[in-house]
Length: 158
Image (cartoon, rainbow, N blue to C red; front, top):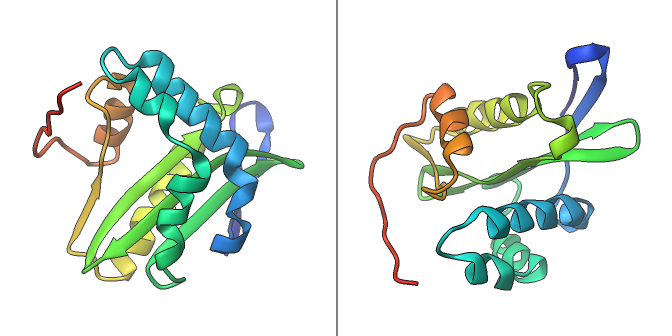
């Protein structure tokens, strides 16, 4: 599925799904996301520092096209955003989403998350969730605008 979106300043963005075997195209964006979490975390910098793309992405290899969706956003030839969602036993989860800092404010994150939420509902997910670092207040606000609210708080020793 491909769709287009015109952002602020008339910039055209293209969105399309990719299969798992093409996930390498998001590696740079994923790394920016990891570095963002590492730099903003008060308590878990080392945890974010130690996460590796290949290890994290390998965990998604058990999913197929009916239980995982990967959507990317491009501006011309540059990948500027992605979203990965999965379904496990009827529960949908937005696993990872990131929009390049230079492209934020154009509705890209909302489009990516919205298409994934729509897909999860089409797949009859009774519960749709997302895990967000409690330190990441701007992202919590983003998800609240999409209708997500805190349910539990998982705490972890450093």
